[in-house]
Length: 526
Ligand code: HEM
Image (tube, rainbow, N blue to C red; front, top):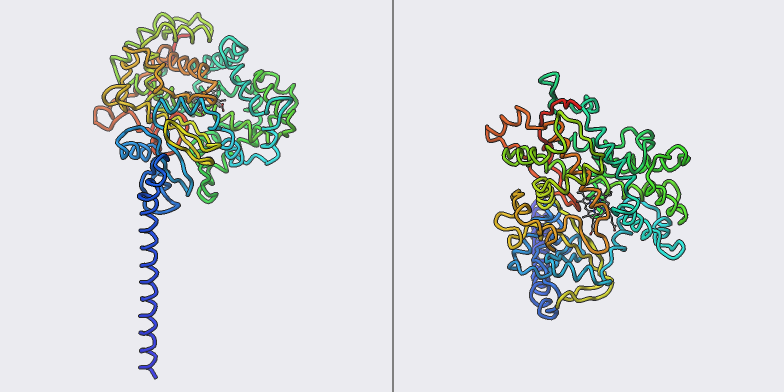
């Protein structure tokens, strides 16, 4: 009986092994057929479609490498196709994503109405948690233009120098000036006080604090920080993890973004529920956007969700750009002294600046070419700016046919690191590129602010706030590396933190993990 049982179980195991083997054989055959179809037959049948960067697993495609390091995946694909800069295809979570890496194709995309931002924005709003009715309302007309278009138009009009931006710019720059006084350096930011007249602070926190507070108060007045004093903490967490929303990362892995988003949007909803008299110091832009959203029938809760999207684009980038500018200035002694001498007619630690906020910003733009070159070079190497479009109908870019329904991305970093335009070692910081050739800022390969219909409307504002912060930090506070940072540099431990090039990002990249620079500031006498 026992022998018979053994015999049966051996037979069953053999049968099972045989079934596994057959399944394995079947799967391998199906996989080979799929490879043959995908990378040999299909490209021959449809030679006018952009080529697909090869991958091993159907549906998963390039998802894993892309989420691990989006820029590197796109760079590898570009080089795989011999750097021709023809459009190519990636597969992310089963979906086709066309990648455009040439300036010429980018301009064709801008000019072609078959490529639309709207379906992607609608999806993003959904991922942000906006209700279906509020999304419908954003595309309803009041009276003859969609609400969403009016909102962006308001940004373009009211932030456009020469229009109504002066008052807002004034508040923004005055807040930056006020925060850039000795008494306003908060104690929580101070790492040590080596003397009564000096303090070591975190450069990262200093840039975040001053610029976020400046923008928040100038756009929303004081009431937003009154309804949620911890708004900035939630925003930092949100900013770090917000990339998960456009890529539909499952909730299980997106707890951080869900948590921080909830706090920030609830704060905005409470803010909009306040009577207008309680927030009369808000900007014209915020009032006008609120009125348009309300006329589309959008209530406070949805307004919190939608305005958080604006809050995000307004605040996600300027502090990071300032951080990189200062890091490069402070680690390059000859550059540091060139900037000090450019600033000296306007700002020094001992003589009060007599110019108003906007006048100082204009002076820095017009009379400090080295500072300006540092600004552009810092943006160039730290921007991972990307435009996204959806293909609305089968359309040609040059002689490449792009299929309806697919997503298209334009990762500008692929152009901003182009050797042909910027010379050797394009990923390294060399402000001389822009100093020797100021015309580079107009080059079609320089697009830190995106382009076409979605070109950043805040770019003039951003430049003024960033130059003001950096100018005051260097000129007024005499910022320099702390002794600890200098020692780290001497011991070869590196002072410039690594840039987080791996996490997908659609603006300026942050430093990785705990990356920061400890800096010494001195009490100015004004
Ligand atoms: C260094 C700072 C900044 C950088 C690098 C930056 C970059 C960008 C980029 C890459 C886009 C998307 C462009 C596209 O899709 O083609 C964008 C959009 C936008 N930015 Fe900025 N930005 C900055 C600062 C600002 C500031 C300070 C404001 C507001 C005061 C602002 C307001 C906006 C708005 C409202 C949009 C959406 C435009 C639309 O949907 O049409 N940005 N920005």
